[in-house]
Image (cartoon, rainbow, N blue to C red):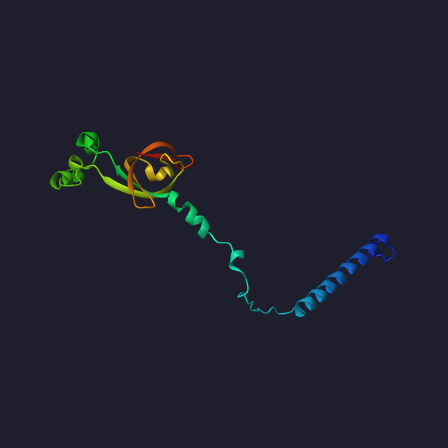
Length: 177
């Protein structure tokens, strides 16, 4: 029995499904196209807000006024350890002769034998969390601190001590002395 026989029920059902699919595709295209052409244009309309009360609008001004006295500026002096020629003597031997000669000839500042400690300053912010002078700030601000000063909202500059740090959460606790 040949497959193209019109009396085959499988072939007849397939043709009917294919015809239905073609009709559905054509119909969806026609409907979609008419929906696109029938869309309306949006127009902006000005709204008069003069009658609205300002108390309904959220504002952070009250919150800022309440917490501002607790916010402090944190100033940190950092001093890196000095590098001495003894620390580099083995490393200098491993340098090429031209580089060794350079350090010998231009041995002024920057030469390993005369390196000075490096002083740096870091600035950050924190906030008072208790009346007895505990301050929370970021660990990265006070990391390797030699001295810490805190300036309050009213302009007072006070010495502080690092009580504890947590690098994982980047938090540090200071105590004003």
